[in-house]
Image: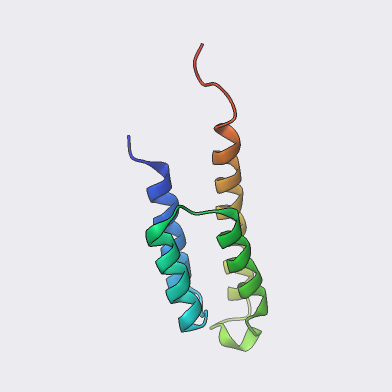
Length: 91
């Protein structure tokens, strides 16, 4: 079975590449993801930077909302995955 951290990392890298973040922020996050797992600090930083981007940087009026919803989904998946580690999965 594939490691779910790999999938999370790949989803976040793809997300970072698709959103019009500043180039230095993209490089910083990509380097952090190459060295470490996805963590709450990174996800919160992504959210804060996404909310700071002016609406006119997006191709459509709804794109900022779409990216915000996508990021919310990633955050929820990450939290559920970490919460599931708290429970014993055997009998």
